[in-house]
Image (cartoon, rainbow, N blue to C red; front, side):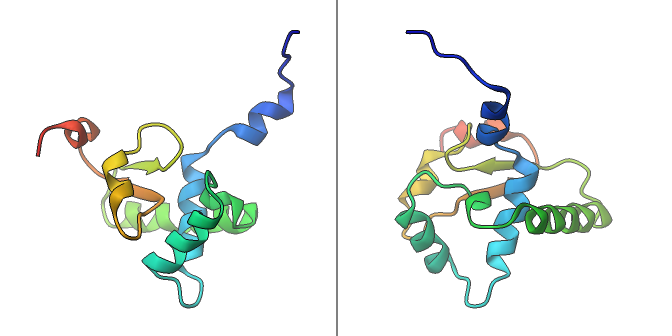
Length: 115
């Protein structure tokens, strides 16, 4: 049996840090959002991404706003790490209410250095 990928497989599975950033910010903007409420929501749908809970156009709008805020604050280079998508520090998962996404500025390699 041979598996064949279709063009839509890539668009359905690709993770866009930009979209996830916007979706996560949109979730935080909802009434009564807290570390606990968001952790509980993601805990009920293991493996989900922020964009699974937010309409794409809304996520894009929030992502553009966040990017503009960072740019206006003089932040030229920043990164985003998303749980379940690539290089996310597993040590952050042991928190009582783990975050699904984090921004960083600087050298990402330092995250793997000894305490």
